[in-house]
Length: 339
View 1 (tube, rainbow, N blue to C red):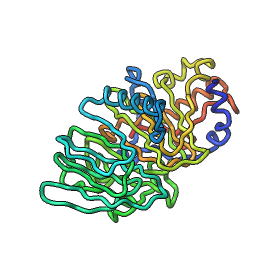
View 2 (tube, helix red, strand yellow):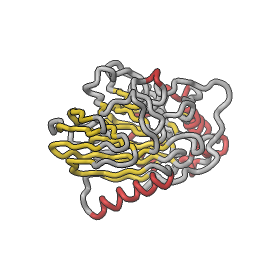
View 3 (cartoon, rainbow, N blue to C red):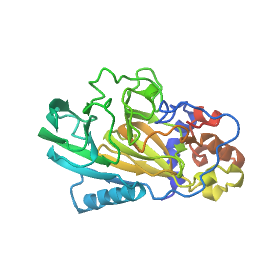
């Protein structure tokens, strides 16, 4: 499949758009001025891999096993499990973050988190996180589907046992990041910086956001973070663009027309997808997907590197126009961006 032909239907809209800024913007709001950041010095440690969590067949299980293997190999001390219909998550020696993925149309489940000091009750629904510290277990009725991360560190006392972005009055929509328009849905559940949300944790960060368009960016291999899109609602327009060519894109003066036509891959997105974006991979979300954006270890400040100004420079240098032009975020192409 010709990547440029895949991008062609997007080009007219994307090149004309004044789009929203990065998914993680607002986590670290520092913009660069002066010289460009240093290019990626190494290739991504692994590839973009994806699984549809509700494909309960051999192919679906193999796909999830690949995501799990790639993620856990790149992040020692972490583990990931998907539970399609859980009524109990047993106590364990590690801390776990339980991302609820029960279908949107179902009613919330009644849950109990059992700790050494007693039992706390909560409802759980798609988009919520149950926080299980060492020795704690979860019981829930009816069963939930959940993506569970074992993390090497324990969240602090300020992180509640259940984080519910649609019900917690401490979590409110703040336009920014992936969604800058008035009334945007953008809710930060776990953050690196206290200024950006009520609950901080450096072992894993997450925000739930509707991504109509984001700027084109990557996280450096050596200092950045891995990222997941846990897709919770989608439509036919949702797309994810990815590229392994950060170093080439950051050197527009050496780009050739042949390589320019092979820079990006286009991925369709549907509810229930789990997409693993390892550090070093350029990516851009489009179309209106609602996802938990999960990062390991977290949104480290200064490790989100924009490349839209380079994409514009490549188009201008090679005279790429119309369907041949590389799609880029117009707003983000006017300056060098590091967050």
